[in-house]
Amino acid sequence: MEGEGKMGLVYEEITLKNASDVSNCDRGLIKKSEIRQITVQALVDTGASTVVITEEIREKLGLVIRGKRPATLANSRKEMCKVTDAVEIIWKNRSTMIPALVVPGNGKVLLGAIPLEAMDLIVDPSKQVLIGAHGEEIMTYIMCA
Image 1 (tube, rainbow, N blue to C red):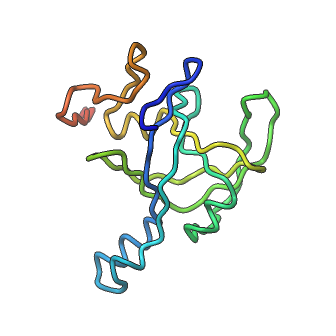
Image 2: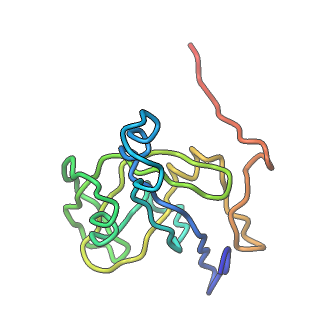
């Protein structure tokens, strides 16, 4: 189903990993096979700011709650949502680490604007898939004074 769009929606397969586990593996504290991870179909949502996951996924990944913050859901309802420690998001050959927002209920995983920007990705509206904003080359812009 990679990149399969339905009614203008774009879904992409992404892998989510517990970023603390990744760091512990890099340090030799745990084996690679012990990194908690899950592969999911995520709705690419440029109207969402971050990555949004469910409580079930948070538990499977063992992500620690670092706080709460208000969020406006797609139905315009305001909710206090949990904010986790970092999750690594992997799409094809690109990755980034960012805290996740946990929404109540059994919603969809959303891949929002901040992780898309961090991975230098945009939505190709004609093909309804993610593509590199600068082709295969990943560009990072740094503003210096």
